[in-house]
Amino acid sequence: MLNRQQIIVGAAVAAGAFFLFANEGFRHWMNRTREAQRLERTLVHLRSDQAALSEEWTRVQNDPSYTEYLIRKNLGYVKKGEVEYRILVSSHA
Image 1 (tube, one colour):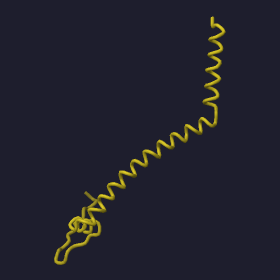
Image 2 (image 1 turned 120 degrees about the vertical axis):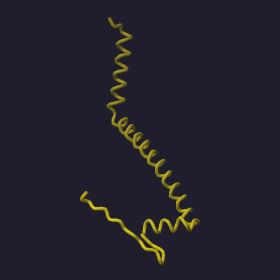
Image 3 (image 1 turned 30 degrees about the vertical axis):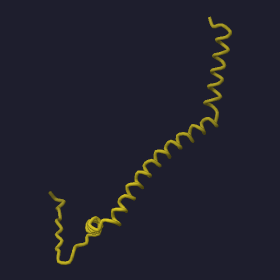
Image 4 (image 1 turned 90 degrees about the horizontal axis):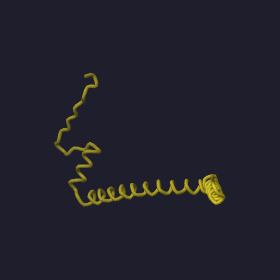
């Protein structure tokens, strides 16, 4: 049988667990902790993106051939005297 001390310890653990997990403040704290972790991961990704974009911006400013490549690729520009060929792929194969 359980002695008196084991019953008291069991009741104390049960009461502690009840107050810890049934407490609205604890759940709110857990939700805020999860949200902070999610935001930290987002911040890491955004910093990585910012570093890549900053590097590309520096390249655009300092490398005329890269700037020309981007203009041709994204805007479809061609130099005077060049002929642009477009190959259309039929959707009926």
